[in-house]
Amino acid sequence: MSLILVESVEKKYEDKVVLNKINLEINQGEIFGLLGPSGAGKTTMIRLLTGQISATAGKITVFDKEVGKLNGTEKKQFGIMMDQFGLYERLSCYDNLKLFADIYGIKKEQIIQTLRAVGLEKAVKTPAMNLSKGMRHRLQLARVFMTNPKILFLDEPTSGLDPATSEEIHRLLLHKKEMGYLIFLTTHNMGEAEKLCDHIALLNEGKIVEYGQPQEICRKYNHQKKIRIRLKNGEELEYENSRDSAAKIEQLFQEQSIETIHSTEPNLETVFMERTGRRFE
Ligand SMILES: Nc1ncnc2c1ncn2[C@@H]1O[C@H](COP(=O)(O)OP(=O)(O)OP(=O)(O)O)[C@@H](O)[C@H]1O
Ligand SMILES: [Mg+2]
Image (cartoon, rainbow, N blue to C red; front, side):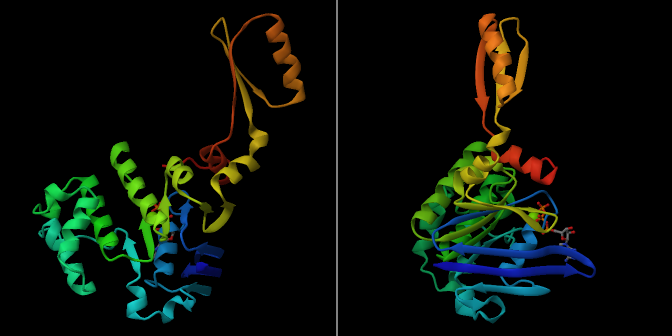
């Protein structure tokens, strides 16, 4: 079932088109990744989808309703993690969550349970301002998880985190997906997208320039497959995957000068660098 439907959406700030004719359909139980270089329009898209700002043109439907017409109860089904939704710095982890628990009518026991789920059980009494970056992220995620939202909007949930903490967060997200939640995330990390996302869209200058399953997108670019050879004399060679190359490689075999040979498949990073002409930060 499609939970989010975006049809010909455009967002302009004065004359500047930030999002241009965006179409998306995202289903329940999927992790969707919006990728793209800085300034591409990813955060703007989340703000539109969550009704924080409205589109200049087009239509956004969430839970079968136009996003602007969702009522308070329906909006409580959103879990939003982004910079604008900050933490109360002087309050402890527990008290930060308690504020939300009160608003959402969540039992107190669940606060501790959620803190445990994100690995913050030892920081229950620590004020937010004394948390490390990874712990802050986890507290923000705890806040999102605690309310049991049907749709999670996560703006760069692992940016700036060490690999182990990112891995931990990935595990939590995959668990939520298994439980049937829809997760909409943005990321600059191609490896993360390949690992987590069922579908991804690559946004460049406000337009979607690629859409699909990560593996499917990489396969589309398979013509870029290269063959890398290291010679016994230490020289490194790279050949296109073509008939011409075959003859040259055959000759190297005959001369017995090859030390190693392997083919390189395009990964999302190479695909996206080609499509955006930019390196991901
Ligand atoms: N309120 C606003 N007024 C004017 N321009 C804006 C506003 N919000 C965003 N923009 C512009 O829209 C473009 C997209 O911004 P956005 O924050 O969505 O990018 P992003 O893809 O999230 O980038 P990053 O990866 O750096 O977070 C940028 O050029 C930005 O300057
Ligand atoms: Mg952003």
